[in-house]
Image (cartoon, rainbow, N blue to C red):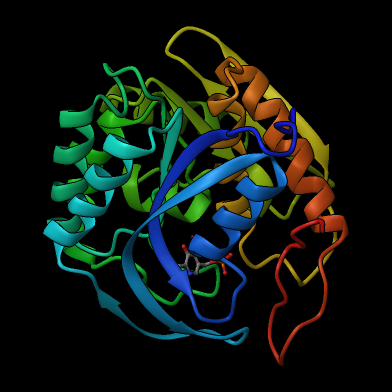
Length: 273
Ligand code: PLP
């Protein structure tokens, strides 16, 4: 993506998500990705997680009105060309975020594209969303998405569909579109039966497949956040959704290739310094 010449104002994007004290995922992955993609990152913190490379041991939710105020504050002053949501933790925060985004023209029906990464749990199963908030994800958050980016666990929790092959991936993408997402991408990266990482993109009419080699690494913490943040960057730069997906897949592949060991658990995808 094009970098702004030194001293000139870059494109801006907003992440509304949770922090990772281990510096691998969440807002840290988003801000790093945005910086590396030549995008100034505005940040609305929705939750503070207590986590390291081994796992998430707890989180603290920011009051919903403070989350919404952060969004209002930066969009009014700085202006953003795209936004993404990550960990939102609770129904009350989802409601506040959907309301403020709707008010400001962020998301489907507005001028500012919104990438919804419907974060439910870490890839090792530590919860990042209260279970009762799944209903708000289905009925409020997914319908606001320009593009929704669930992994296969999130697909199962949100749609009830267990993706095991291309036909079930297509059904799941259809279900997410029926819920109201403009575009849905079903990420096949966690389907470990394949040598390839194939993602399926659907807009209600056509299915597009994006295929990259599977990168064997235990250091993939923050991969989903990085993909969604790279998508938001490409959309902020004016890419179409399919072109943004192509860019973001390539970006994550390079980050996975450069991932490094950290701590006793799973290291992060590399920020590509
Ligand atoms: N922590 C936060 C704040 C996140 O947003 C996420 C993922 O979305 C994670 C942790 C989990 O990351 P991973 O599933 O890559 O371990």
